[in-house]
Image (tube, rainbow, N blue to C red; front, side, top):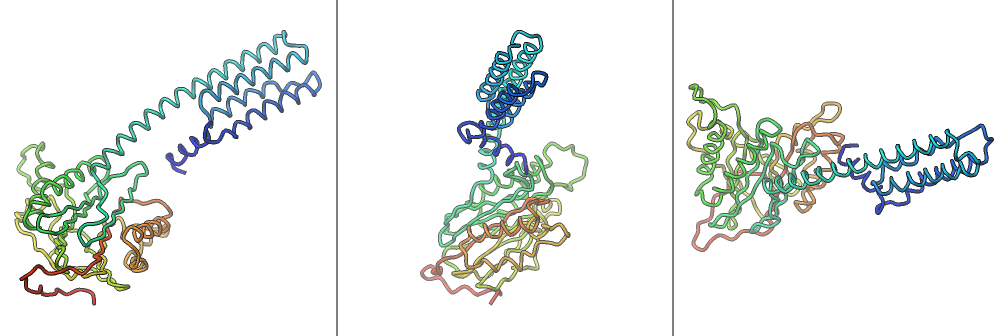
Length: 390
């Protein structure tokens, strides 16, 4: 059980969520009181009453803990009265000990609840910030139906080194980005935020995919090197593999440029084919260092009913306990008839089952389906079909 699950489970036990649990310390108090009175005078069970507030603190708040502490003290007083030893030093010491322990339990509850409120506030702020960076993909974009899934390797994180984004252009097309930043932790999040910002700022106004790739490479290199000393070394150790796509509304094709990223998968019915190309460019962040100023764009058919899967290596490199990779290419066609969101839900469940709920790396998948046959613009010549799955 992870921290977040345990925290939510304990909260569900608190008064207002499951007050029946208060029967446990209350019943213990009553049982100790009755049995202690019925036992011989030389046997005392009163010290066991301290368990009532100690148990309550595990699932309840300060008020319920204080109530159970007061009930335990009252029970100890009742035992002393019925036995006729209320004024004895032993009973007085037990009552004082109960009061001290109950007060300590209440104090622990107050401190814990305050810390949890602060933690909840920090989490809510972090969730909003991460949601702004990795925005949900639109469900509809022209003739496309789109869904994205991000699976963080760290339970408490909603953004890491993997990223995706989409943007509409003025000339009637949808542009998409999927990428994987080198490294983990805060540095990867910083670079992911930079790439997402560069894509959103330029995807709608850059005329071509090569220009967009050059823009993102320059922005990434500038941010990664602006505070480094000028030591004559122009090689950047930070980079990101990305695939940029442009899908026109009125043409049955997909244009894309790959920068060191795994190739997209095109699913047509139950058949799957990787859209492999001979021109895989250097990752973003390394292009400028090698004077890369042009990126080749590949074009493949993307017809009505076809499904594109974009993914990061966290999917294909996920291993089970025996070290076997997740069979992504074999499993993906099982859900090709589903809507993109449902397909990703099945895929995510299957992937988590394969790795037994623990991913070693962040993973991201984007599913895109063209739902209607595109119509060519008036006066446009038929576009030649590029090789693709048949």
